[in-house]
Image (cartoon, rainbow, N blue to C red):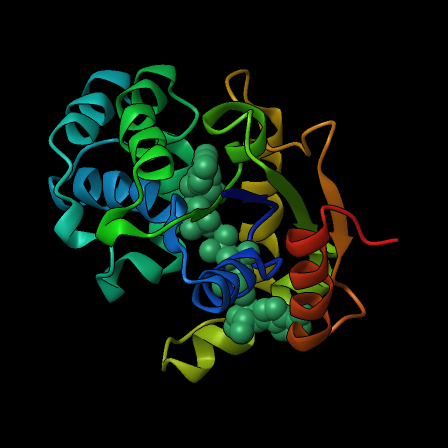
Length: 212
Ligand SMILES: Nc1ncnc2c1ncn2[C@@H]1O[C@H](COP(=O)(O)OP(=O)(O)OP(=O)(O)O)[C@@H](O)[C@H]1O
Ligand SMILES: Nc1ccn([C@@H]2O[C@H](COP(=O)(O)O)[C@@H](O)[C@H]2O)c(=O)n1
């Protein structure tokens, strides 16, 4: 079973994906962390995340050991991630890792949950279940602001909102694998739903293949 979850930043897709994976005993891959790791590596070397050769080299040298590093979770790294993510050679370099994870999940798991921007449209276009988790940009910015403040980051709410708008525009406007719901995805608008309500709906959908 392959479960694909896409959606814009801070829509709650990671929270949902992680919980679904735990519930069903599936492996989980946060594909955004791959792009964040590439953006972070470029920044560490003082490079320009928008430079195709620099970004592709970082993607090809990616060490999966860094994917859970807390230094990837800043707004600055998110912006760099969305710049490297617009480069076709970077996406190509990361594609096989994601597909292999979905087809042969680690630790003998019987399924995989992947979340990102293009899982249902490109990476796992044949996934058994596809969801597109979204929410209004104001709701998402409030969620991210709260999360970053709770982690001790010095952030300004209006700056988080602007960063999110910039990132949405870059992710949805790029020519390669833009952020978009797959035609056969279940769209879940979580603006007025808490994480528990979203989880309940998603468990029903994964189990039964529909909500109605
Ligand atoms: N339905 C919800 N209602 C309120 N808060 C939520 C909901 N779902 C998730 N959150 C909170 O919103 C924040 C962002 O959630 P999460 O990290 O899951 O989003 P995301 O879509 O994976 O973001 P990103 O793409 O940037 O990684 C977290 O602090 C999370 O606890
Ligand atoms: N499948 C994906 C996943 C992510 N991206 C890009 O990475 C950025 C960071 O992702 P988060 O999920 O951690 O917010 C995101 O803004 C995208 O630009 C992607 O292109 N494809």
